[in-house]
Image 1 (tube, rainbow, N blue to C red):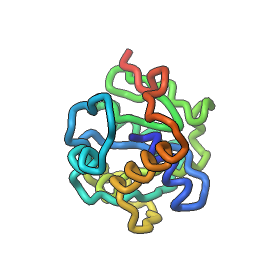
Image 2: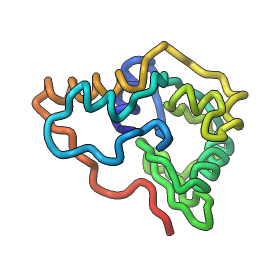
Image 3: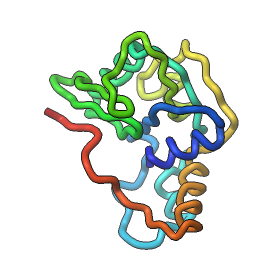
Length: 164
């Protein structure tokens, strides 16, 4: 799902996006079954009308967010990876480079999280870019684009979040 959010956010917002994060609270189906993906399946998976937003934050702020997420067991990520050790995010990598505290990163996530949901109050002070695009629609558009290109939705090799 985060790969879909990263891919579609770049198209919709027409700007570089470094990573996409997805909170588990927004996912309502434990696993998708192998086979055809329907719009109904995606509605079951994501029943909420959460919007995709972009926020820009420093590496220090991103580390703070990932530490919070790590304390909850981690969230899926696209465009990066991190390990969890003692409920902290360690070895954070964005596009195969170590997280830089002073660098600015653009993150795609839900408006729910950006507005402080899932105890992410640290994000409420950050400026959001919101185009009214539902995360669910991003997933639908992503699957449609893969289908039109004759590709299948595959789970990428390798783990992006590892608990040490």
